[in-house]
Image 1 (tube, rainbow, N blue to C red):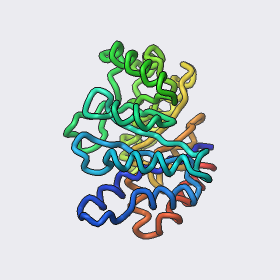
Image 2: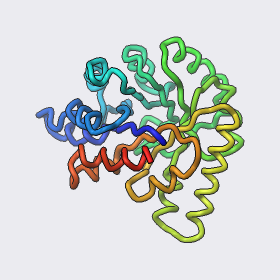
Image 3: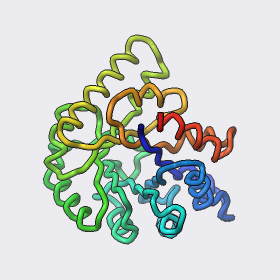
Image 4: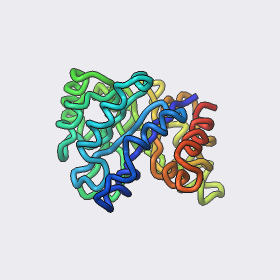
Length: 247
C-alpha cells in the first residue's frame, strides 16, 4: 500500500493565466485531502510559473488545521537554484524532495548525479534535517547512483518514472524490460536502507502495474490527476488514484 500525495502545481498554472485567484490552490488541496489524499506536493520553480511562495504559506496554514494536521506537506525543488531553501526554511515541510532541475527546465527530466554532487548534497541534507522532516532524492533507476545515495544522508529516493510511463504507453517487450529495471532499482534502494517514493507521469492506467514493485511508500501525482479532474471532478479523481495506491 502506498500513500498518495497530490501535486497541485497545475492548478496554480491555470490560475496564473488570469488575475482572479481562480482556481484556488488551497481549495483544490482541501478537496484532495477530503477525498483521501495523504498529503499535498508542490514544486515552486524560480520563474514562479505555477506555485508561488504565497501558495506555500497558504498550504502550510491549511495543513496545520484540523482535520488535516496528520497529512503531509512535500516541497520539491533544486536546493542549489532559486529560493528553494528560503521557502522550506520557512515552511518546514514533512518532506523535502530534492530535484536537480535547471531554472529553465520545462519539467523534471532526470535524477541526481549523486557521485558528482556528493559533498554539496551531503551538506544541504544535513541542514534540512536540522529543520525537521525527511529528505528524498529524485533518482533515475540507476543502480550505481542509488547505491551512493545513502552517503548523502537522504532518507528516501523518489524514482523518476517518466521512462516507465513512456514504455508502458508504447507497450511491447520493452515495457517489461523497463519495468524490471525499476524493480531492480527499488530492490537496491531497499537493501541500502532507503525508503521508496515514485512520481512523474504516473496515471490511472499505469499506476497499478508500477505498484506491483514492493515497498513503494508514496506516489506523488499531479499532471495526470488534474487532467482527469477536468472530466471527473477533483474529488472523484483523487478517490480513483487513492484506491489504486492503497491497493
